[in-house]
Image 1 (cartoon, rainbow over the protein chains, first blue to last red):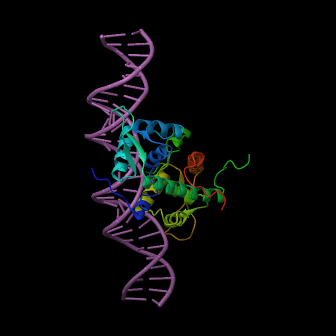
Image 2 (cartoon, chains in turn yellow, brown, orange, green):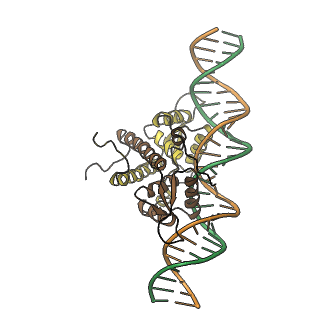
Image 3 (cartoon, each protein chain N blue to C red):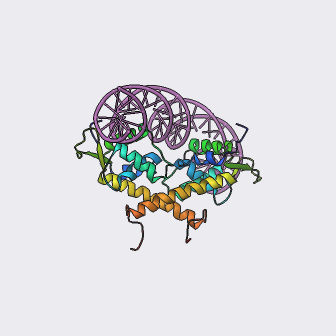
Length: 121
Length: 121
DNA sequence: GCCACTATATCCAAAGGTGATATACCCGAT
DNA sequence: ATCGGGTATATCACCTTTGGATATAGTGGC
């Protein structure tokens, strides 16, 4: 898997909706570069402990994203034992598309008054 | 699979986050009872064609939800060839919990200004 | 009579997720 | 100094979820 493939816009659209674990990996990287283990911690924190990736889920997702060129490994940090990643342009676009998709769903949910969205208490 | 099990609150919480297909099945039922095929159409419409369940995904999800007593089969409609379902109380609670979870994520995304959320056009 | 659509159901393979296990480094406490 | 816990990456084997294909059958238009 040495050749990252640059996905077209159509191929990017076909990745939607993202599975939860995949979404959170991109989401965790959205506010800056991180190494794998840090991504895992971030996801646990972001989700209030509700989403907890095991190492298998984490690293297979990272490897897939690197192969798809949605995230990029960068050489920073003197520490040899860490591999640090950041979102690529395509990865950022994909994340935004997914967030927009999710917002559409919540809009419909609010219109249908499906849940007490902290409107006014 | 003749015995639907009533899940406790803890068991319900462990189902979060819901996989996309499972979420949409509950979501499609939120505004009223529907039969299987209608659920499928509703999901396609709700998602602007982005989510398209195959029959296997649809019916295995329905069967699982019935077994978990998250949806209930009801006898309405003279038509014999349709099986109509509605959300159970537990199913409704689960859907709301999932919607709340998703909203939390989007709140964080907005705080981090990760995407141009259609603020005011 | 035929075709497209509605409707449910199952088979099978592919994709995705998870716990267990392994390796190894770092650091603080005993 | 060493022991244990946390950091860090990686893979295995199993399971769940998903999706395309296939099957069956009723309905409605033309």
